[in-house]
Image 1 (cartoon, rainbow, N blue to C red):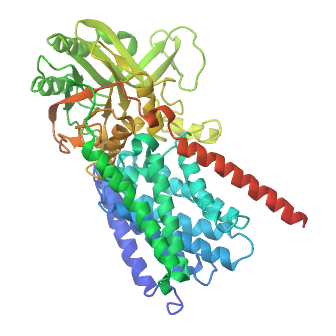
Image 2 (image 1 turned 120 degrees about the vertical axis):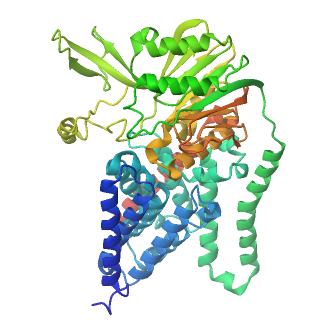
Image 3 (image 1 turned 90 degrees about the vertical axis):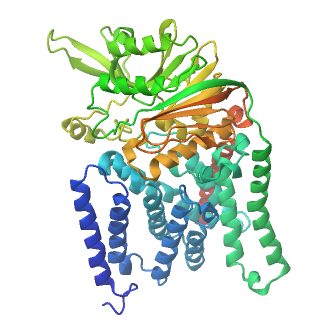
Length: 597
């Protein structure tokens, strides 16, 4: 059996992989924080599965080679993603998959969607494991199921649809379907409840923001389009036999590839070197309190945490400071209707009143109780008062507030983009059968309360948008703050959930892209991870270290600029949707006509 296996020494390899997975899994069960262990565990488990079934993965005679090519695609895409410095690998990442698809399409009369699904799913699992294994640190395997295994399936769908449509497409247009399908999927993936847009292709260039200063016009979809075009051109050059003959056609094709990759970078580097931040300078202090979220943050007394905040704040505040920024959920279990009367808020207000220009923007885990009838909504929960027996409604929020010197009015903003599984149970009406299990485990399918618009906080200084954690991954959504008048953006987050892994670093780098898209300065406050200032051209300034209690002071330029991208949003995604629908209709009509013939 071993002689006929496509993988030599299969049994010893499986034994080694099983040993690695067992040892790593055992460590994860007994350690409070996992760090990079999920990468080893997931890689070993998936490699074990693939090698175990490799001989029967597909009946195609090229099965072994196709598995190798699919693995290569996943590795290229994984190592091309931040925080790896090998970003140019993204221009090649899809090429092996496209080679598999072409060979299968050329060898069969009818589409082989299941074969394409198998190989593309394997490639995308490899990519997702390499780039986002750290998600498991947040909430064990529940988050990783959505972010890795389910997300890989979603990624496979546009690739399978491309394979389905190519047979009825003219030769020179068939790869437009691949590009349109992928961009359409990225666009739609931003707009549903199982949204996990972390691996949007355009996010790859967060590693080198100086390469994509033109995101102020296109947003990250411009980067996704750039990567897809480069992959198609390189693929067509590789499969074209003329390249072996060093023909004029081949040389022109190579020049096209070089121009497509190099010219946008040159133009961007010029823009990066000549761009100057616009607007009036405003002094801002950012605090990073450094409370470990799994075992410390929500167990330490509010007043112990308050002392840390006050000490760090006083170390940097001056009479010229206009904003003080604390991270996401700085304080929890806050009654929205009684904030002014809470002792923590009274002490914070006393600090702010010492500085005549000062405003404090911070995150809170809050709730609101409704004693009267209110319109029914999904996030509303019911509870019985143990003392009076009264049934009342209440709602939970991941929110931000602004306190102002000499002003008792507290401005309140509710987070609008939620992490699937952790903050929202996707489509509870569809997955109704899971509700009893969730309730039994002490959870809820209600989710959090939100608001429709991105309303910035206002003061005499200007307007600031308070983007809470996950919201900063959504370009067009993030634009809502600026469209509603924000002159600068504060990102408040709690990146310690992912331990000291690439997760918090990727999240930080994505903020650089938001700064370029909007040309707004950003102050980023993390509970732990990296707090920093980010210039309007995406430079990360004064970045703090992981597991460091710190405060930093800097200037942000407040301006009224509204970039082309702020005004028009993800136009590339919307155009892709239009093309995708046309191609789908074309496939459907031609398929019907073919059956009639």
